[in-house]
Image 1: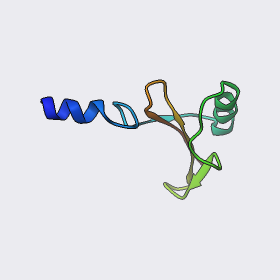
Image 2: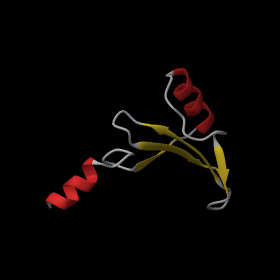
Image 3: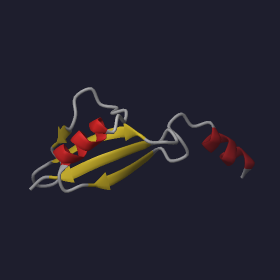
Length: 76
């Protein structure tokens, strides 16, 4: 357990590497994140990926403990 705890404590991206949150309006969420002054990790956001039937748009921010928080919307 001690070795595992040491690895977690030294992670660059926080204790939780990545968490994803579904949103209904990715563009509105992105505008609110920018207005709040949060650090967006992608150069061009929101990004599109061809997942599921109609694709998904997403962007990732740096959370308060260094973790990555992804906001995504399934399109359709």
